[in-house]
Image (tube, rainbow, N blue to C red; front, side):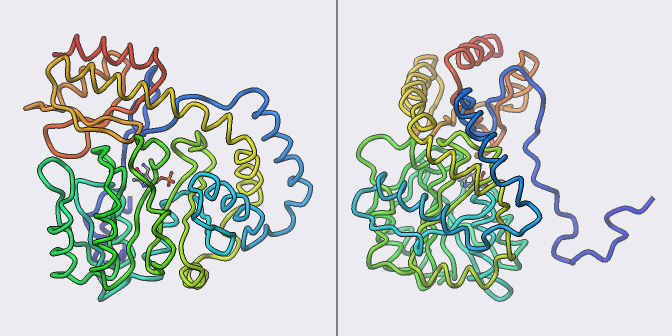
Length: 362
Ligand code: PMP
């Protein structure tokens, strides 16, 4: 039997473990921040028809530049953030925002270059960074999971990274960043600044999107996804908004025909049903706020959340609590600072199951 160690794998990949959030078949999956509401019958039918429409020409490659999809995404973002002035030339799409991040690092990172982030944050930022041969620098979030602008600017000034990652709302803490922090980092950064807004649609009132900063900031990239609020995680569609020159840079590294005709058709159909799909966001935000209140009432420490998940603690042995919930059919996520756990916001039934299981696990 050949083992991984026997292969002439890159030295910098030796000893690394594959990304592995457990994918278990459980009654209550509250571990990967998906939207718990499946598409309606009407949408399922429309998706089926959209796939039928492209099926007859699957002998041909898809539109390499996904122009129609990017036009639809730009129209959606423009309506979502009035005044952002987005057009297809300022929007790019790929297989999940993970691939978007990979393309950004392929274009702007690489050997001899650095990317800086503020952990605890999305665990794939350092992983994709390192796999692209870029060196990762962790400049840490503040104790309360926020990011004091002066400290963020000092970290950027000290390390002068080629790419800065700001996640807002942040995974796994739920913390949204004020625009002033993002602007301060943009002013200080010598390279690209990526604001990962995978959970942007779940923000509470009063925290504007970084999309509003695009004008006049050609080194800003705002990434979004259809995996979370848009309830289309299975589609694998992530996208970004940036200056047209940034998209020109990404065209240098993307693989030709990276977005299948099926993906493009499904994503466009989902965008046409945006009202249905995003119609669950308000209910999920209300459920989140109720969950935060309940956990605090039970005496837990809870991070303020602008996302569709909640980080709570603190547990001297979080693994034991995680396992005790799992035995009761509730799968949450062991992620973030060592004494904390993260739970995704589900349906009212799922949340009731979580609350009961947690009470029994204390
Ligand atoms: N960014 C953040 C902050 C995330 O939490 C996730 C998914 N967990 C992603 C990006 C990637 O999502 P996707 O590839 O499904 O778009």
